[in-house]
Image 1 (cartoon, rainbow, N blue to C red):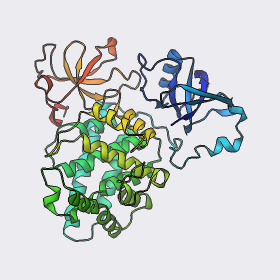
Image 2 (tube, helix red, strand yellow; image 1 turned 90 degrees about the horizontal axis):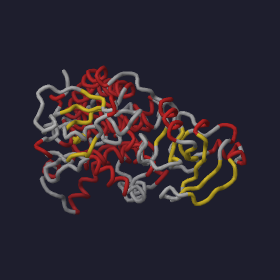
Image 3 (spheres, one colour; image 1 turned 90 degrees about the vertical axis):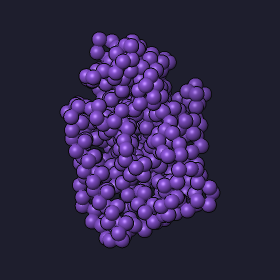
Image 4 (cartoon, rainbow, N blue to C red; image 1 turned 30 degrees about the vertical axis):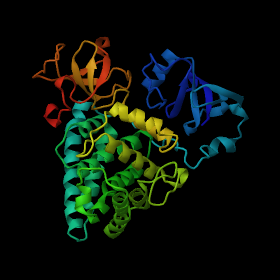
Length: 427
């Protein structure tokens, strides 16, 4: 699929623009290999250090003012296939109407900046996650008992989680990746919600829109309460008939959500459409592309990514960076490419929660992104250079003093290091 872009000198760049191609290879730069949306002045300065011009997407992100730049069409490999007219030749109507594609991502309404450090935000995120889990557990018990459930506690907890993640999403992204003994269905509900909030933040959605998305994610699987327990607890792959039964959870979920009352159309649509797919292969309606709301497209991707990176009784988890590659390969057919790129952006070049081996042989846990130098994240070092476990574990910024760099992402269990639980984090 070809992409219309604007070739633009770096001095003309602005926050909110979607960069899809540099004037040099991505490798060796601190930027995301599949493109990124400019979110800070630091990124503008970095682009100025590395490049003289870049290519920004026409149908996603902010556009240059005053008709500056040159219209260029790129193919899927990033090669120039056509140089068109100057941007000034676009009519005002053409510029203002972009994106014209109903499935195209909207331009950011809000540019969220980091407002707190990982260490400062961690206790707030923990408290918000605890409240959210308790509120959802209580809601499940009330619904299971056939009683009408008030949503005040869930809404309040969801709002607290959103505010924490809007200040700094990294603590929540790490907590979702750590090992947990919670049942898959409950863990999946909360963890996919964290992914969705992070994507909404990266896309610059308004707070109210993110809240609609959050509530939809937390309620999306309530319909499973009406399914046979033996199917939900099966430690095997389900057959075709059983899969069709599982699909009924969407219908039941919509009924439960409507009975709860007080939910917005956006939240209800997430419940109804989070299993629809961009190519029309989803269910229950088989709709495609722009027929699926943006919130439902985000929800579907977050739901799928968390499912394949979570360990279940019948399947092992896929390492996050492998899951990213698998999803990116599927974007043309199943998921929207731009949303997968947004997911890659929020996960980080070395995904938060990954076990990694550093260049000096130490094993570490990626705990936060370094948005100025994406190849050198913040880590918690778990071993010495001989891979012997450390008793004292501290956070390290790999960008300080130039490294060491990450040598490779490890599979869980490598060198005897399994994915740790929340106990490794400071109290």
